[in-house]
Image 1: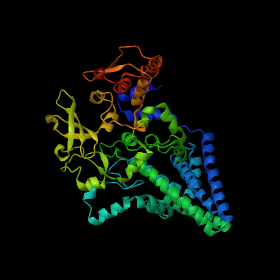
Image 2: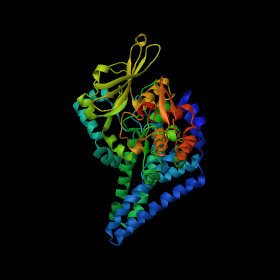
Image 3: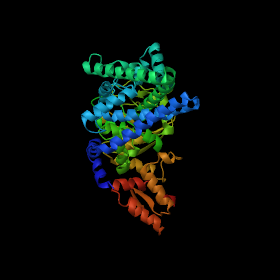
Image 4: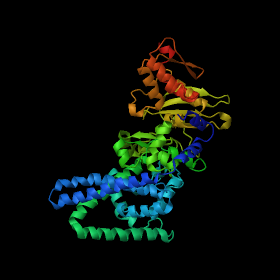
Length: 509
């Protein structure tokens, strides 16, 4: 439906083009915002009261209600988050006072948090601007330069029990009671934290007076800790995934870092609702003024965005071990990889430069070459099993070698002839080299090709000089023909070829 518009993204600066497109989704619907606030706040209050009633009448099993209550408290924080971006009502006074009120429930001083969070958005993915509103992430070189005590401290900080257990408790119960990091940044951070503390204390005293200190602690403390741990987990997965983006100026650019340095955490629908669609984080970072309830609308209208930085719930569990940024491989790696030297390489002034001999690779295959002598090769890392594109620059330009994960190379825009050549190489047998792909990992183009073939489609791919086309030698079922004409034939050439490379090749027949 948006083929014409998205085709224009492939010419110039695609991320900036997306900024223009997403600006059309920034206007909130006030009635919808009020509705979302009501269906989150009211159930939270009801669940809290029901948990107290269960304790009061000795139905201790009722304490299980703290679990959904924690979910709704987490969602209240997501609403506060939208207030901080001015996207819940798009009226600064409404957003600010709603955010301040919600901050009492979430134990998060709104104005103090909003300033730190704005710095996070402005510098996400910038290796030279780490440390404010983010999770501390070291490069491999920085970790290796630490003393043994420093390495132990970083290991402890990154341990799951600390990161998702002790850490959230410290953050919400202690750290946010004072404006750490902004103590000399004017009066506002102090007013924000102290005013929030005062109202929190008053509300706590009132509840203790009404229900008793033991029921209050048995109910509210688990709710806060569970919601805090879930919130930190979401924030972690949104940026700490293998193919995230980090770079240094002048290479760092906000639009690219926003789109590729944040994940699309593709959660099941109930979790998507409870977390306020925050998993669509790459779209949020690119245009933070889009209200959370309009993010699914963006992915519905532009499904190509759904595959950028996409990780499933199951895949996200593997992100816990990824704690160091490898500037040469351009990905997050584990401590084991760093310490065992799987990616050891000679020091280089150019962080994108990788010495080929320092990485054990196999299945090296050239797929493109330019007139000036540049070469592009597909290779597989024998240690990790991952595939990379190796670009060998021509000797007059320095002969540098850079390595890029295949997924990143294929997603990078504007699309190039080298990308088309790689698609042709991967598609010569009708599917990429890595088989056994789960359905939730398939690209939209692969899903279209599979559905067409399932309906009995007879077209076959033909590759001539890296140009993909199709041939149909026999009649095919009407359902397959109609599916092709309605869903594939209407695409622009680039999109259609991305589907065609997944068809069986003529040489397979």
